[in-house]
Length: 553
Image (cartoon, rainbow, N blue to C red):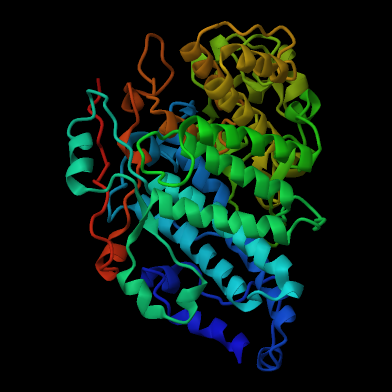
C-alpha cells in the first residue's frame, strides 16, 4: 500500500545518519495526531493534512542543540548570514553574542558547528517535503500538497545551493583560498540532492554526488514550475502558507543568482543579463500577485508591533505562538529586541548598525528614526521606544530598535517571543527588479526605480550617484539598510563579489572584528559536514575549510 512508504523514509540516511537521529525525531508534527488506523486505511489526504504542518513546525524549532541559544528556527540561519557581513555591530558586550562566530569565520570547517548547523537546519525539512511529494504523487486531487511541498523544497535547495557553491575571493588578505578552490575541483558544485525517489531506494544516499549549478537549478526551477501550476487557484489563510506570490518570489531569487554568472557553468540555463531579465520579470509578477503595499513609517516604527506582526508587505512569514516558542532564550527578541528586559539583547549585546551607515542615511529616513544616534536625546526618541528615560540613557549609540517584543510585552519573554518574522517581503522584489534593471537597462532606468522606492523611506532622498558602479553600490547599501538582520544581503554580496568594511577611522566594530576585504570572505562558502562526507562516497571533494581565513589588516 503506497501510504506505508512514508515509513521507509526513516531508513534513508539523508546523506548523514546524524541528521535523522538528532535533529528531527518525529515522523509527524506536534500540530496534529495521526492514527495507525488512518495509515492502514491509506487515508491519503488525512495523512497529508497531518504531514504538511510539519514543514512549518520544523522551520520554527531548534535543530542543533539546546545549548546553542542562537538556534531558534529558520530565521536564525539568516542572522548568522548577516553577522558574517559588515551590517551588524555588537554595540554592547560581544562575549554574549551567540552569533559571533559568523563575524570571525570560526567553526566553519567540516567538523565545525556551522557546517552541522546548516545541514541539520535544511535536510530534515527537505525530508518532510519528500514525504509529502511521494504520497501525493500525480493525483490531481492532491496537487495542493505536492505544489506546496515542491515550493518549500525549491526554497530550501535554493538556499543550500547559494551557501555551498564555493566562489573565490581575490582579496589580498585571504591567502591561498582561491588556489585551493581550483585545486579541489569544486567550482560550480552545490550539494547532494535528496528527492522523493530516495523513499524507495535508501542506498542511493550512500553514493550521492554534489550537483553542479546547472543540475541543481534545473531541479529547483522544475519544482517551481510544478508548484506554480498546483497553486494557481489557491487562496491562503495567512502569510505562513505558500501561494503563487511566494513561488514567483522564489523564481526571482533563483534567476537573480543565475544572473551573477557568465562562466558557462549555467549550461542550458540563462546566465548574466538573460537571467537578470527573468529575475526582473518574476519580481514584477510577485508584486502583482501579492498586492499589498510597501511597509509604511507607522509599521516600521510602531513600538508594539514593528517587525513582530504580519503587515501587508510580508509575502511569507514564520508565525510563533505561545506553544511554539522554544524557550525564553531560544527566540529572536531575546537577541534583537533592545526593549526586552532580562534578555541577551537588553542586558548585554545591543545589536546595531555601523556608524558609517548611520552617518550616510538622511535624517528624514524612517529607518534612521529608530536608530539611536550618538547625540540622540530621550525627548527626540521617546515616541519610538517603550523605555523610560533612564533606561534609554544606558543604550549604546547606533543600537537599532527594529524588532519589538511581541505585543509590546517587555517582561515576559515567552509572550514577547510569540511573534511573526518575515521570510520574504514585497520590498525585496522591488530591489531585485531595481538591480536587475541596472544590469539590463542601465543607470537611468535603475535610478528612476531607486528614487521611486526611496520616496517611501526618505522624502528628501536624492540618489547621490550617476554611474554604474556607484548605482550598484547604492542599491545594495539601501537594500542592506532595508533588510538589516533579515538574512537577505549576504547572498547579494556573495553573488556580486563584494567585500566587507569594518576597519576605518572611528569604526564602532569591536577590535576583534575589525578587518576589511576587497572581495568575498571565505566563510560565505560553507563546508559539507564530515559526517556527510564520511558516509556519502559520492562526494569527491569538499570545499576548503574557510575558518579564520582572513588575515586582519
